[in-house]
Length: 140
Image (cartoon, rainbow, N blue to C red; front, top):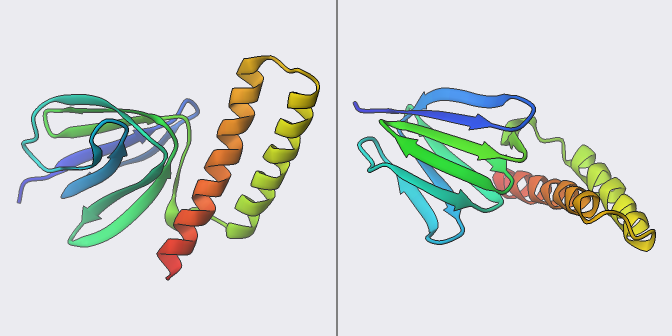
């Protein structure tokens, strides 16, 4: 059976790199897209959400933040600001991270912080909320 190499990379590390059957991800321009072996070369912007993949016929997910995807020669490279495998998400830690990020964002906004700092804090808060949503949906 034909397969793909899926790699998910953040600025800090490679979060995931394995052979999978196909990948489904959220894009900005086309909505959700399904990447199968033999897909044409593609580069597009992804939006925060659940990256789903199938390995040995079983579905699995990774929570991803905004970023880019590149499909070339049966390799799907996801470059994202943050990512975590769903089974590694701790809902209580995600809630606490969201709370801290929202407090820091509110304080930075009041103090008139640099827009780059505000964007980073917004990203942290958004990703914490996303983790919680995806983890809750996975458990249902």
